[in-house]
Length: 367
Image (cartoon, rainbow, N blue to C red; front, side):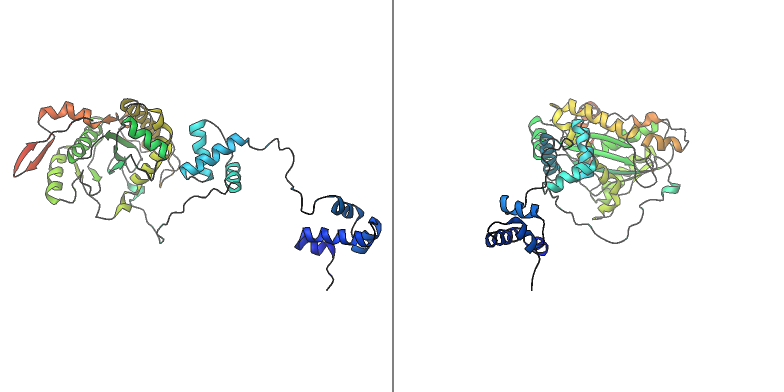
């Protein structure tokens, strides 16, 4: 079978040019005769004779619109550090460095540098809404959860080390209101039931002081900082919360998906707050100050695209219900529970634990 130059060029460019050089040698260097034999132009023959056997790079010598190498290295480094893909990474770079990159540019850079993100396994199957959002009243349903801030799997190593060295709070206490997605937050260094009851009591007091009416259902998990699966302890807590017309209804063991709204907020905390602002805090109260600003941003300025939110902020969603509750209820003060304990604990009225049928006062030292 006779293969033409162009067919051989598509299979092996180097071999095609070697054939041209052999034909030139047989024709004693006659370019016109070699081009006539091979059926190619004389320019192609001269290029095979004078140039390299391998193809030259088609990369342009000058690319004025190309992303600078320093920025490209920054994008690659942050992608490997945060494990974000192009869309979330572009938003993260804009928040942290105030540098705007197109999503397509970031995607091309990640693809060019072969940056891959570890894939997560998810359970398939159909899903249904956890609540009847169409008939849900504001401040009637809450999800209560705690978050371990020092999470090596969620935070980059440098952020984790900074929080450890500076002694920043270790735990976040979080109550998420379902209808408006508003949040109420506190922090602590330790995790115990005394702080759990203290935090819930303060949030409920704040709500009732701001004209929130109606029965309140709080859905925690079965952690030791809450009822921890004990019916006696749950009954004791509900007896205390009855003064606020509220009750706790823990999720079944292992049904963490029932707290999906709070869990999604925890992931957002990692990406938008801790990864960006934790390294800028040198002590606890600087951290609490930024946490307060982050909560205010969440409640008043950050649009939410969850179910039935349609891109509204929590304050806009609250206003759409036309209730008598003012948006000032969303200005809940972020606090360190150790500080609150030092003030409230001396009254011997709130933080007590039941032991042997008697109430024994508990002690806690601020870190």
